[in-house]
Length: 503
Image (cartoon, rainbow, N blue to C red; front, side, top):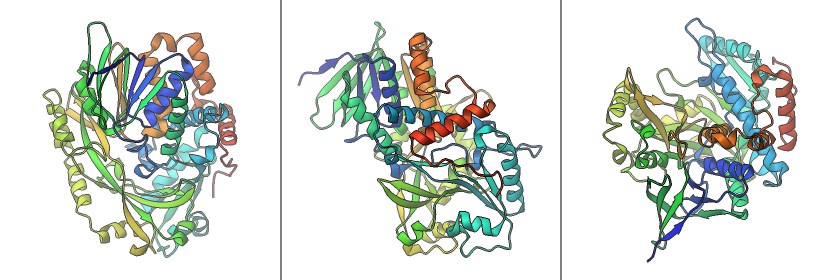
């Protein structure tokens, strides 16, 4: 069977939220670009982007306590929260652009208003949350946040969590009415639908990228196999983006670019408890995040999430972490061992040695019984009954391991873009906050990989049309922040919240 040879301008590997966002942006910036997208599964957005495989929080730093660490002097550092909140505002603006352009007809298919809350108990944690609230409300990005220690107010905010709770201990919560629940799977499918209808874009499902190399002429040769027909393809292209979720690391290592040397990955699996009782689901309307146990990793932050998936309300609690050697939910148990190379062995060993507590935590999670999981749930839902909840398998996450001069290797818990020096290839590694900040991540990638065009007046103008606050610092511009949040709330049909600071 003869190979099919094509010459697209751009190749996108993986049909998730990242490739969809980059593809739409590039076609808006340069409509005559030709793009080929390869996905090894039979449908788009079916790994980490799928609604059941992530929390759908719309990470905006409203409720995630790990984004606001307490410094040695007792003050609260909100710098990371400001960055993530601003990134999410850019995502909202881009999504509003998609709606106004008719690329997405009804925003309610992928985004809904769901309050974001942080909830703690115990004197020390209450003091932390109070200081966090006072620090965060100095930023325009967190105006409207409410705080309360009052039993009656907390009961109004989260009746399911307060029902049957011991009220003799100190309790506190913050609440942001501006929070959202996002179905990233649905959003991604709409973007790919738009791309497929455009000229010059081809999406190939059930196609696996087997290898790729850069040749002397500067073009990448991407070798692909149709998993159904066994037909082989070869694409010659100037630019490759690897947005394959947990599968990005092996492909980055396969590329052979010097910038990818030393990178490794640590896979972590996840599980949820999903509520099956409509009466219980109806009693909760918020995303409530708590504090991770002392010594446990950021990925273990417990939360009770209201979700809206395919128009139906759902309730999830978790995550319960686990360990597997797979890099993808539908991957291979050989993913981890095959990712170990000569140039990343030392960083991976060093990261493993310095993260022994994480290993112990994951082992304890794997060994959890149903009774253990229900006990964890009852810290947030005291009246929870085992018969109302069932276990749901979530998506795989591959945490980044990278070289470090002092420690040899370190484990990262965020996202990282690794790109070739000449901008001809880029790969996205890591996990949370991921999908929520895809827009800002892809804009940064465009400037890194297409610098000349990105700095041209034409592309600059179009970027500002898609993201009106591009180039601004929202934490320093209260009026602009308020105006843009009101604008995106109107276009995305979200509830506008005008609330006092304290409850």
